[in-house]
Length: 219
Image 1 (cartoon, helix red, strand yellow):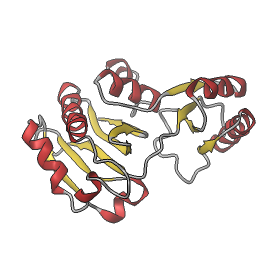
Image 2 (cartoon, one colour):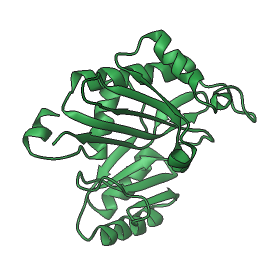
Image 3 (cartoon, rainbow, N blue to C red):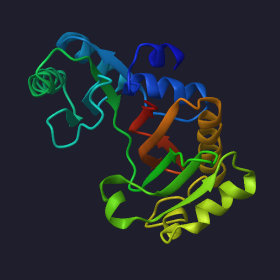
Image 4 (tube, rainbow, N blue to C red):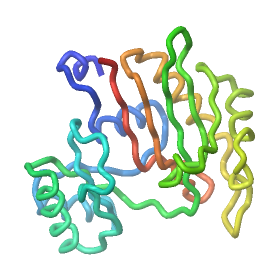
């Protein structure tokens, strides 16, 4: 993080973010970075089909709707075609992230923001493409105690989704609380990070797994 700040960058790329999260004990999807079509197909074989491909450059903070993401790819041919399409959409030879697809019907959001004069604020709520529409989330100041993290899970209107739901098991509340607490520790240890957005955090069965992640650095 210090090297990235010294280099004048505004964000970490997604591969760097997921490495940092993994080092902090936060579960993330398996990813590899590829720089050509054949490397992408080989990485997909190691990650395991189906896979997603995403442009992986720090300058590209938001990818949806820009042709920079391809989902549910099931063959090497599909991966090669998607790799080429992403580079055409990007307009340059960007690295491409090859990522496993995590099955799960429940998507959550976990994040961090800062307000002047306060410790970092940790956010938890319902995630996915409807995050901004549903606006079902709650905030606490870091560092989070065990009680703080547990309360956050019960503070959202859609908390019933964390219980057994339509054949899906109840969420592992201990694992979810640990994600919230770990994100608070990252924010406290790295004041140069201005914002964190983990969306979606998918419940793969009972366990939370971060599928998409963004860190924004301070100016």
